Each structure stands twice: as structure tokens, then as C-alpha cells.
Amino acid sequence: MEFIKGVTFGYMSQRGEWATQEAFESLRLLKERCAATHVILAVVAEQATIHATKINWQAETVLSDQEVRKMIAFAQEIGLKVILKPMVNIADGMWRAHINFFDHDVPCEPKWSEWFSAYTEFITHYAKIAEETACELFVVGCELVNSDRREKEWREVISNVRNSYTGLITYNCDKYQEDHLTWWDAVDVLSSSGYYPIDKWEQELKRIEEVIEKEQKPFFFCEAGCASRIGSKWLPNNWELEGSVDSSGQKEWYEEMFRQTDKYEWVEGFGLWDWKSKLYPIHQADADQDYAVYGKPAESIIQSYFKKK
Image (cartoon, rainbow, N blue to C red; front, side, top):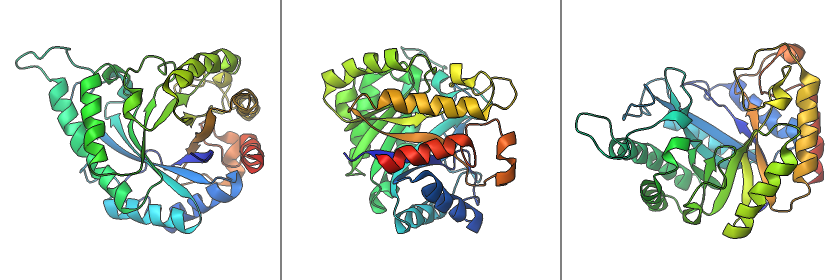
């Protein structure tokens, strides 16, 4: 696998937002300003609650298949390799990691079997699009922590995806979960979300290295990022952290992450978090507290790093 110099694009975009010139220009700027070779296209659907067994991937708010295909085509046209990443969110604001059901079926209660049936329908739909559009890599799931223990069901999901998509498959496990998955052998590439505190990268990379040595498969950080607000460099996974803008802290976090990961040849890339399909005016970059890197000091760190890799 070649080194993935990637950035995640368009997370939380809704129908119509990828069908604009503004979105195409945003993707072009991503490639140019970050020196990216890959883009991770995030297509988000929702379920009502963490206990719902219906995934509303055909809702009118979800990006249309046509605009997903067109964005993939545009990315490829400008020289980016595409990683397609369908994601499930919870409509009430809970994090997808908390999706959970009883381990054993109980009458009249929602069941893992029902949820995995809905998830398989959702994920194989996008696997077919990934196949038809020749995407480089397909992300079969993201940070579904409570479901990770359902090994049998995940193997079945991956088997179904392979019937539709012939390329490389990864599962994006959450931070701190790399050494807990029991079914890494079912995917081609290992990946995780690298939201580690600025002073903890060394110890976490040493822990992950043991997994890589055991599995003997490629690995990359399918997500990695830090918000530009005070305190985020110490707790980058907390998107609800309150604080004022701190672009320098975000820059320091990226510098340290790249410094530490460069020590390990098995870190074969990133899907940095993130880049919006609708960009804020660049003169307002120093007022943005989010994970976006557009126009911030961290952006130049990313560009320099990707250019030298």
C-alpha cells in the first residue's frame, strides 16, 4: 500500500451540498493547499437513537448517489485517489460508539441482528458505488465501539461487502481500541482514529505496534486531528470541549504527531480531520475553533509534511 497523504472531506454534508461549484472548488483547494494525494469522502446517514435498528440512508437529507459519484469522479479527475467512507451518526446527538443492544435476543426489544441487517444493506449499497467508481479503499465501519465485540456479525458484513467490492477494505476502529478487535484478519488494512493527547503519542504508538507485529498488515490513521481551541491538544478527541481559539495549539499537535509517527515505518498514512465542503472565508480562519485546518497554521505543517513524504 502506498503512503496515504489524505484528508477527510465533506463530513456532515447534506443533499445538494456536493453538487455545487463551491464544493468542487473546496476539494481542489484541499489537494492544492495540503499537498494531498488521497481524499476520504465521508457520506453520513443517521439512525434515530443508539437503540434504533433502522438506518435512514435513503432519507432526503442524505447526499444523493449522483452527487457522491460526481464528487468521486471530480476527485479522480484532479489526481486524487478516493477512499469512500460511509458513516452512521445518531440523530439525537449521541456518538455512534454507543450504539448497543442486549448480547442475547429478548422478545420485544431491539436486537443486534436487526441492526446488522440494516447496516449490511446500508454499507453494501456504498460498496457497490465504490466498486463502480474504482475507489482505492473502502471503509466498512467507523468507531462503532460497542459493536466491535460482535465478531461473527462483522465477519458477515465484510463478506457481504466483498461480494460487491473487489478493492482493499479497512475498518476504522476508535482510539484505544486497536488491541481489542478480534477480527482484524477479516480486513486488508488496519486503521484507527488517532486522537491522542500531544504528550501521549509515543506510548500509544508503542502499544499499536504490538498489534501491527501480530497482524502483519498495513496500517494508517483513517482519522487524526485536533481542534483549534484551548486545551484540545491535551484532549483532541473531545469535540465538545469549551474554550477560546488556539490555532497555535493545533499546529503544535500536528507537529508532534508527525514527529512521533515518523519513527514508525508501519504508519502508512493519514486521513486528517478535516476539510469542509463549504469553507469559511479564509480571513475568518483565525476565529474558527473546529478541527478544520483550512487557512490555519496547521495547514502549512500538513502541506510541508505531505510534500516531503
